[in-house]
Length: 639
Image (cartoon, rainbow, N blue to C red; front, side, top):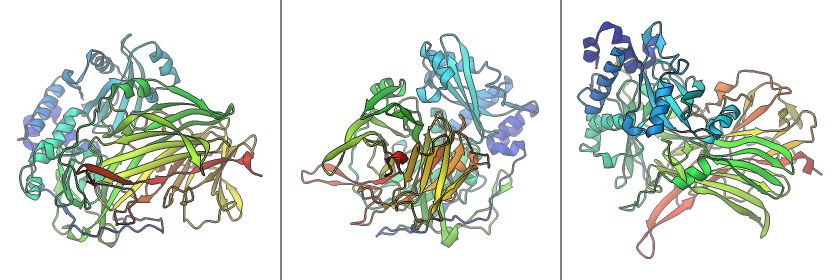
C-alpha cells in the first residue's frame, strides 16, 4: 500500500495516508492504556460456564501483509486516487446502489458547502465515503424537517470522515433539490455501505492467517455478519478512531467460531480470534427471511402511528437503529414522556488466554508501535455493538421482524393493562452467531409503566455480557428532578451524574431506588422500581448502571448512531454526555443500562436459545429469554 502512495503525486499523499492510518495524518498516534477491564457489579463473574471448554486464542497478522493484490481493495484505492486528482474528497455511492431520487439526493448533498465543510484540513483533502443514501425515516427528523418532508420526498445522505472519525448526516428535499438540514456527529461511526462490506469480506477471505486457521480458503457462504462494527482489546481496533467490522466464520460442528477483525481505516486485518459457540444442533437449511419488508417500512418506519387505551395515548414508529420508539406519551391527558427507546445492545465476550499474546516481540502498524493491553486474570474481551432497525435502508443486521404487536397484560388471570412489543432478529436466528431482541413497553391501568428489553439469544458464545442502553426521556412539563434513595432519604441530584447499583441498597418501601418528579409539583412523577427478579418473568435482575443528563436534541432525541464501546465493561458510552452541567429546573433524560450474563448450563439457561430435532424429525427452537428493565409507578398512587 505504501508503494502505491509513493507512486502518487505529492499533493495526494496526505489524502491516501489518511485512509491508511486514520487520524495519524492529523497528528494522532496509537496508544493503549495499561488498564484492566473491571466489572463493578459484584454478583456477576466473567467465567466460562460451558461444560465443554474450547481453546480460545487471538491471532495477530504479520505487519507487512499487503492487500493491494485483492481486487476489491485495488479498485477502491484506484477510485480514491482518481477522486483526489479531481480535487474531490468524498467517494460517492455507485449509481447501481441508488434509485433515481437517491441519485438526486446524493448530488444535492455533494454540492452543499456545509455538508462538505470538514473534508479539508489546511488545504489538504481528507478521505470521506458516502455510506448511506435512502428515504428518510421519521425518527431522523426534527420538527422543522418533518413539516418540510410531510409534503416533499426527503432522503438521508450520510458520509463518514475517516480522518476525523465523524459522521455527517444531511436531509435532502429531493423534489425541490435542496438540503433541509445537516448535522455532524463527532467521534461517531455510521453503518457501512455495500462496497465497504465487500472490502471487509475480501480482506477476511484473502488473509493468510484466516485461511490457515480455517483450514482452507473460505467462501462467501461461510461468512456471517460482515458489516457489524466492532472493536477488540489487545488489537489496533481497540482504537475507537478506526472503523472496524468483524466478519465471522462459525464452525458449528466444532462448536467454535473464527472472528476476523477488519480495520477499514487501514484496509487490513487487525486480528482474528477463536471463540466457543456452545453445543447446538443447527438445521442444514434455514430459509432466508425477507429483509426488504415493504409492509413494515410503509406502515411503521416511514410514518408515525398513534394508539390509545386505558387512558394512555402515544405515537410510535420503528427507527433506523434505535428499535421501537414511543413518543409523546400521555396518561389521562397528562404528559408522561417525550421519547422511550433502546438505542443499542452492547454485547461483550470474555475469553481466557491473554498470556498467549506475544508482548515481547515488537509489533508495528504502518510504522507505529502497538501495545497490547491484557485484562485482569488472563482475560480479554471482544464483541459487537448491535443496532436494531427497520428492514430496509438500514445496514443493521438485527432487523424488525413483523410489525409492532399490542397485547393485553394479564396478572393472576386479570387484565391489568397492555403491552406493545417489537421483535428484531438476525435473518438466520437461531443459528450460532445470530441474535434476537425484543423492545417492549408495558402500560398499566393504574398509570404505571415499564420499559423492557429482552434478549432471546443465541449470539456467538456461551460467555457473553449483554447491556441494552435505554434512553428514557420522561416529560413532566419539561422540568424534572431526579433523586436516589440514600440514607433513608431522597438525595436530589443537582448536576449530571451516574450511579452503578450494588444490588444491596436499602430501598424506599423495599421497592424504589430512584425517583423522578416535577419541579413545580413534587407529587407529579414516578418512583422507579429497578428489576431485582420480582416481576415473575424469571429475570436474574438488572444490575443496572444509570445516568442522568440534561436534555439536548443531538444526544439521542433523533435516531442515534452507535454509542460507546461494546467491550469496555466499565464504560457504557453515555459518559460522553455527562460533563457536570446543572440539571436544576431543567429538562432531563434518564439512561438505564442493565448488565446481564448469559448462561447455557443445562437447567440454568438464560439469554439463550437452542435448536434441536422434535419428535417429528423437524428443527425446533427452545428459548430462555432474559428480560430486564425498570417499572415507573406514579407518586400519586402512594397511600
